[in-house]
Image 1 (cartoon, rainbow over the protein chains, first blue to last red):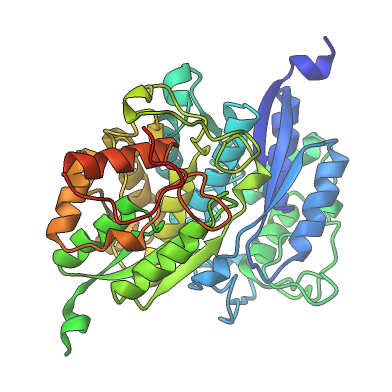
Image 2: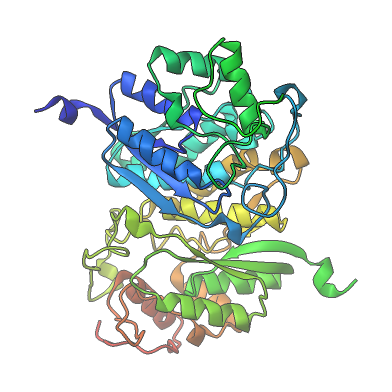
Amino acid sequence: MSEEQTKKPAVVLLSGGLDSTTTIAIAQSEGYDLHAITFRYGQRHEVELDAARAVASHFGIENHVICNIDLRTFGGSALTSDVAVPKSESADDLGDDIPVTYVPARNTIFLSFALAFAETIPASDIFIGVNALDYSGYPDCRPEYIAAYEAMANLATKASVTGQPIKIHTPLIDLTKAQIVKRGLELNVDYGLTTSCYDPNADGISCGNCDACLLRRRGFEENGIADPIAYQSTKR
Amino acid sequence: MSEEQTKKPAVVLLSGGLDSTTTIAIAQSEGYDLHAITFRYGQRHEVELDAARAVASHFGIENHVICNIDLRTFGGSALTSDVAVPKSESADDLGDDIPVTYVPARNTIFLSFALAFAETIPASDIFIGVNALDYSGYPDCRPEYIAAYEAMANLATKASVTGQPIKIHTPLIDLTKAQIVKRGLELNVDYGLTTSCYDPNADGISCGNCDACLLRRRGFEENGIADPIAYQSTKR
C-alpha cells in the first residue's frame, strides 16, 4: 500500500484566500489526504476561483470540486449584490457588528456541501479556515456555531449509523491574522498564490482597503514581512 | 394594512410532492404568508419542478425561488446517478436500512438554502415536510436531526443577535402517509397537482413501484380514496 493510500482522507473548504490556504498546509502537515471544495456562489471576486485552482495544484490536491451555487438568488450581502463593499483606512476601524459583507447562512451552506462531499468519498474529517477573532461580527465563524454544526452533521448523515463521527476541524479559529500568517510561513506557504480581497479590479488586483485586505495587510505587517501580492492602494 | 401584510412570513421547502404540498396547506391554515423554495439538484425526476410550480401557483405563493444546485457533482445516490432506483411489489417490502435513494446531506443542504432565504426576507419560520415514520431509513428526517439543525441555525445567523429565533416546523414528522393524506384532504388539497415518483417515464408518469410510489399509493388506499394521479403500473 502506498503512503497516499494509508493517509486519512479529509475534505477542505478552499476559497483561494490566506486562511483556507494556511488550513490546507496545516491539514497536510497533520497527515491528511485532502479533497478540496470551492464555491462559485455569485461572488464579485471570481478571481478567488483562479487562486483556489492554483493553490489546489500547488498542494498536489487531485480531487478539487468547484460547486456552482448561486447565492445571488437571495441577495442580502455586499459580496453578492450591488451593495458597495465598505472601505476603510485601517483595520483598527473595523466594528463588531455583523458586516454588510456577511452572506446569509454562507458557512452553513458551504459546510453542508462539504458534508455531502465527505459522505461520498467517504471521509469523516472536514477542515474549514474560519477565524473567530478578526471576523467577530460573523456569527458563523464562532466556536459554538462549529460545535453545533458538528452535532447536527452527526445526526444528519450515515455517520449516525456507522459509528464514524464527523469532525469539523478549525485550526485557525483562535488565531489572529498575524498568527495565521506566522504559522503559514513556518509551513512554507506561498501566499503569492492567494487572494483575499472582497472587491478586486478587473485585472484581479486587490483593492487594499476592504475589510479583508486591511486584515491581511496588518497580519503581514505584524510579522514584519512583506505581503507578496500587489494592491491597488497601499495607503492605510 | 392588508391581511397579507399582517401575516407572519415563513419559508417552505416545496418539492411538488405529496408531503411538501400538504405542509403548505397546513402552514397556510395556520396563517403564515409563504415563500417557497424548490431545488433543481440533478434529480432524475425533473417533473417535480413542474409540479412545484403548479402547487405554488395553486396556493397563491408569489415568491417561489428555484435554486440550481448540482448534487451530481458528488454522486452517491440513486436519485442523482445511474444507480437503479429499486422497485418492489408492496410498501410492506421496504426495509429499515438507509436506502440507495438517500442523497448525501440533502436535507442539510436544502435547509441551509432555506435558512439563507429566510434571513433575506426576513422570516424566522421554516416549514419542511419531513416524515420520520415512512422514511425511517433517512437519518435527516428524524426529530433529533431537526432539533440539532434548529440549534445550529440559531447560532449561524443574525438570529444569534436579533433575539428572533429560527423555528423549523415539521408538521408531518409523526404522521403516517395515510394520516398525511387524510389531513390534506381535510384541507382540500388537490393531490392531482403533485408527483411523488423517484423514477417517472419521459411523459412524467409515475412508475408505481418505487418506494415513494408504493408509500403514496398505500396512503390513499388506507383512506379508501383513489389517488388522482396516473401510474404506469397499478400492480402491487
